[in-house]
Length: 321
Image 1 (cartoon, rainbow, N blue to C red):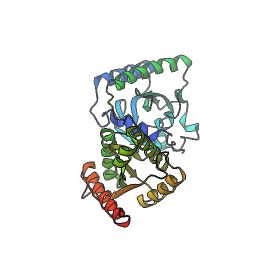
Image 2: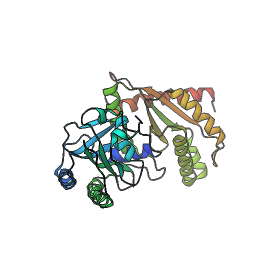
Image 3: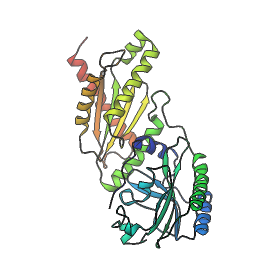
Image 4: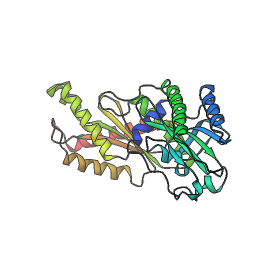
């Protein structure tokens, strides 16, 4: 079995997906109407609106299937979101990517699959509208065109629910967007026992920089720092700007500690000086997810913020003015 790869735009894609506030919501007639029509028109056993989350595919609408989600690493849709075209598998039992997949060798015994990527208003692929059957079959050019039209109807419904969750200056998550995604990530960590760490960054002497060089220069520094975070951390990590000169990163299921990530970030900052300041300086507080203590992302942020101020005080004592 071949597990689906992680898209290059995974962090932004997940941010956009979670901003829809549609995951784990009840079924809705506006989606079910479309999947009923598609199932009947194509004569397949199953039709789904599958949204690809960080570790799962969750079904907003389902016809012919009882379960609400499956693991992403065995999903067909996790593969389908990598391409703009419809992904068709005529007989999964003869496809090396899926022949030993649990969904093929066990219920629902998938043989035929056709999945059309569905996008949001920012053009990120949220998941698919997919057709599934236990018998092999072919899928014509006309069939593809019809499925594409059904998927466009799903896209129209998804776009009607979008919200602004991106920081305009840095193009990473804003406070609202970060909290949305991180809340879902914590829920997943709690359910699966996955590790997570939160890092809270504050740029040192940023007010003085603004006063000396002006707000335009300050904006340049904020953009530079956001790009540094994106380059340093994984696409699976959630990166956000909380406001002003405060930034946060949520690391989940990482093989390295926050200390290792911070060390790498220091090296990268030294190699890429900022135009206004030769090397950016910041204070950072890190906290590991404790399910007994952290019942919300807000509580984790509080603890990380406290640790950040301890780091700032320590840095000031080492470098008194």
